[in-house]
Length: 189
Length: 96
View: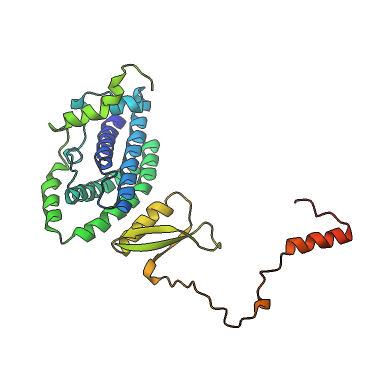
């Protein structure tokens, strides 16, 4: 397994799946401005996934789409944190967002110091958008600080962060996520 | 929810122009939403974000002096120019 594959694939899987889960709030977030902001964050995450898959794909001689959608569900290496469907629980959604952004910030710092200049460059670019995500997570954290449901959600979800590999609920997500792709086998879209 | 009016400056030195509004529970959220909607794509170099309640709106203007000759309406300059040109026999200048 190449260095990029080892390093970047789990991150790309995290970003893709979290982007997917966050996008489930589009149209139904607690209020409209938040809908716009959170949907934008979801879209950013999917954009980051695409760019990360692309770097791995360049090395493996495949495509970002194949890495994103054509692997078997057991091959995904995303954190357990990003997998559960949390709609309609906004407190847990924000708890996940806060936990993820905190961990992602540390990870990006390490990637920015990578010897692989393409990886370091991409990490720097991603980090510029993540600065906005962190600001968004922080303002919600401040707002929900005294909310018991939020504190409980942080406790409940924190242990999932470092568990990798797919949970039983992932099969359903994978099925939905790759449905269109599998609907016309061999299509080049 | 508080309504905040957002003004944006497109380039340094230019006047701020009204861009729209965002609804937010407090100033921190208003900042985030204003950045998201009016500042993230290089369309602004600066934003003013102001609670709508803080904007003083004035819309009734009393003509207290009743001196209509101070006002410029009622002088259709276009017509007068046309007449003057006809008298002088000159054509209007070509569009630049």
